[in-house]
Image (cartoon, rainbow, N blue to C red; front, side):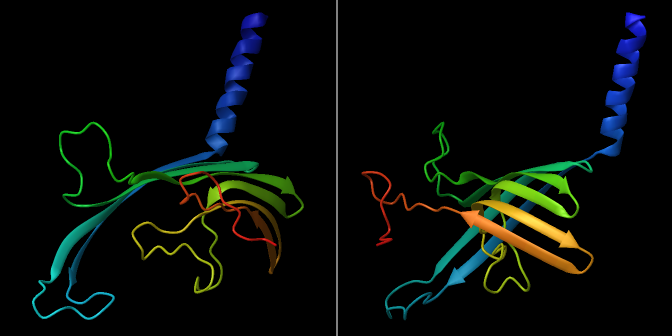
Length: 174
């Protein structure tokens, strides 16, 4: 009898995974740049700059009807900027680009929490900035409502500037 319950439990567990979808993909994007006066006029005796930068991403997602998980890791680097024999990354180019979970709450409501891309309309004001090598993401909580042709997203994010070596700095909220 106990063996039958174990087999039934495994069968039901397998049904859960057959209803789900796992995705795994990647991106390798090298970009060559020739800079001859980038940002300002170049001096007459200065040489032009030439370099190749690369963005490499590894993405994994898992989705069921009740929830979604997504993880995206990226490394953005300029070729030749890191010494070859050092065991660590000098420019801190590796980062978690996205890591979020979305839970379906029912009746058109869902919530999405974590590091995520917020992209709306033509992405002119708020978007993923995917043309830039590093992209743009937000550490945010998102409450979503979607019914027929109506869609509403409400996001809450809190950002810090950690460029001050003494710690987190108040950016002047007074």
